[in-house]
Length: 87
Image (cartoon, rainbow, N blue to C red; front, side, top):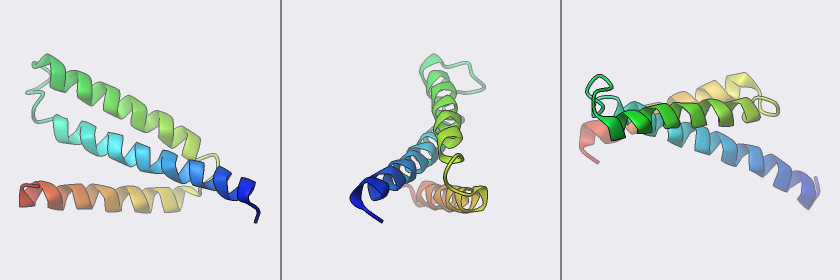
């Protein structure tokens, strides 16, 4: 594997990281949106999920779905633990 291949693969792993972060951010903002009544948290939810789906669509062209789902759930669990701990 040469440097160009590594850079290309790394790009998709960064896209996966961005998808996980945007999904966790959107999910964390759901409660603050108060049933989509409060404007700013509602915008964060919609934009966060839109970004998550966009990055996920890019990632699934290269990385197998099983790996993507596994790492996504791990990210969700870590965010949940962080939320419970008050981080």
